[in-house]
Image (cartoon, rainbow, N blue to C red; front, side, top):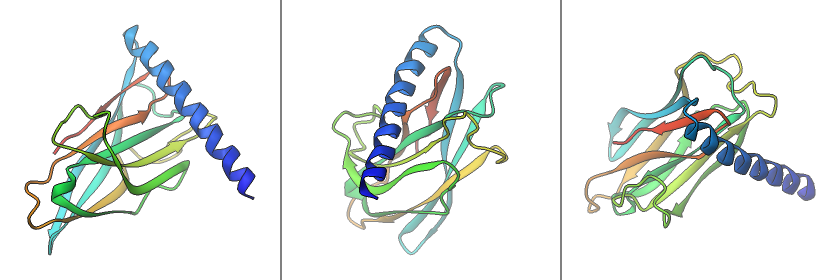
Length: 170
């Protein structure tokens, strides 16, 4: 059982690396369409702010091999991060455990941590029959009362070949 899970994780990693390499080649040749992920505020109740994580694609390509995203935030302003209502079809990573953003993936020095979501379909059918724009998840952030202003950003951890990526900021 554990071996099968390790094989699945290794396969996802190899695919992600391939998607990253190919997406760099595609965008350098100027023929990439763009995947977008935006954060849309939903509500702010009792120190918990909810955001819709919304996906859409600009161009003719509606189906892809997937997408991997990081949602960045400034840890001084946040005490807890929770995902709910995650789009399950093709989901391979749902990791709300904060990771340090030492590489500054979102090019924003105000954010220092991130959480990860990723979807994959080797047959290139993701996000399947879903209507776009698609809410990938709801992100609930519990604010740290003495932590300052919340900053959020989205970056890609993997993008399919032939596509580029643009992430939203708040």
